[in-house]
Length: 484
Image (cartoon, rainbow, N blue to C red):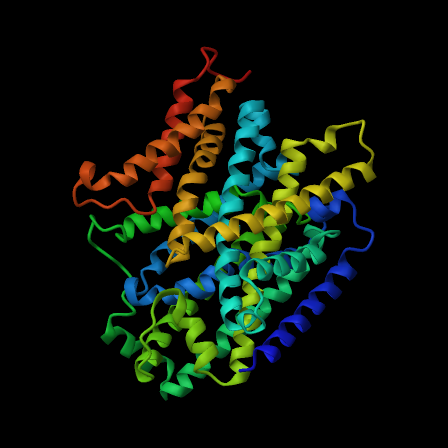
């Protein structure tokens, strides 16, 4: 399909986003930017968060991984559901009771100032790495599909995308993102469903018949029973639960939207309904992956991994499906990038610069600082996307989960220690504990064959990281062991 035509649809879609942003961003202030005036509709937040949770990596990498791992991702998804229950009934009541704008303020009141700053810093590191990895994957596809035809370099494509995101998040923040994410999630899911039905029609199969063929080819296997495998179902389910608790429940970007809901009951409904929809959508993505590989065989296409969906959608499907794929892909990209930049801006302003507590700053001065921080994070995103372009990892979802294991582990340890114990720590030593834990995990992961033989450490590295942080905090506990 003509790159010019594809590009025109991208521009049209972006103009719609700008219109939504203009309407929702009118008369916005710092309070609406950070938490949407705590007036967000829970149904809109739940639906929009599906897009944020999935991102372009899920859109491309989950179907692409089916050839290698079959439907084993369902094991992690079962863990996700357990994790969302913990978020709804353990973390959300805590955040609402404390009336938090930044969830890391809990660490300040419970453990101390250094713990608070350490938690915020690890979130910033994790979200920058994770969001830019997601952004890189989608930008790279857009570059190859459209922008190369205009001789636009990769860095310029990334810059254009970031400017687009800045234009519709600059004023409204969370208040705007709740609505734009809803629109984008709708487009992404519509694209997913259309692609599934199109391939089924081309294969002349129904749903049941296609599942039978997938089973014969080994694509639809779900559970792995080998305890030594990194895909062992017990490991995957437990890891999935902890991934959700950390990457959603201890992540300012995700919880920023949840605590923008009017009250705790609605926020809990948001989390639980989003969990069910998310699990359903992931299963459909896996089903699509099986269909893509079956369709590729009929076309004699030898492509695997992250490249299979873009290759088939853009080169072997009718123009209208190619357009739908591009719009759906962009719809998967924007929710993960716009929310990340907004959340990073909020965390840096509230937790690092503490602008809301500075009496010497007027509302307009705070807004100017917030806007400069917003622009600065966009520049940081550009830099890190170029780094990922240089690294060029073949499976971004594997890389993302590895990043999460290292950077969210200390957050898991900090929050767990703060919630489950009443002990006080030597706050000045907390940063050293939180750095030491992922360093130990790095060497454990690197030399696991030497240390553990055939036993493979997979996603449970996150749990190990959190446990090491927890143990480290116990070692630096003060003699006065309880809070008065």
